[in-house]
Length: 181
Image (cartoon, rainbow, N blue to C red; front, top):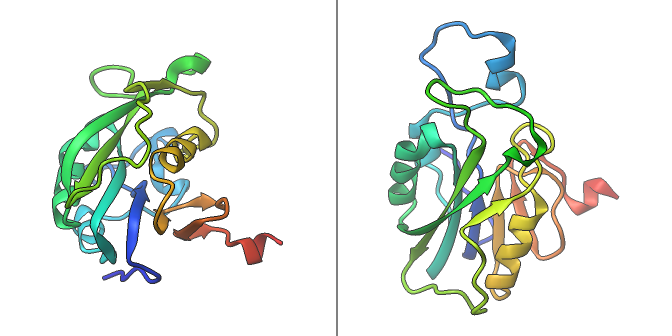
């Protein structure tokens, strides 16, 4: 079981390393584990995050993992409120899928207690941003979170790289400011 340190947090931003597939061998192009270690749903759900009484969770889920994402929301003590769709098909690259070419990801917005945004700016529910390396999310979304919730401690779980000032991070690819210097 993973216990996150440094809280309590008001803002949690997470991109879990969802485990894919049914155990059958996959072509290399579809093997997520070659990019980073994945985790079973039970392990993701068991993560202990110290959060404030009134907190917000921004949780990334792909279309095939949407049902599992709701288990995580509940296990972490949050309630679903809304979602933002990242249209990542703007670069023209195709994506794999079993039923359609999935060119979007979902950012679930969930709260614990009463945690409406500090800033009353309304962002569009569909955001088109080009993608970069596998699973890396555009900086736009963190900027959006900072705009909506400028107050309180914030953490990004399963960070790929470094974070701007004011954010704490957790993940096997997280590079702290001290390490980056």
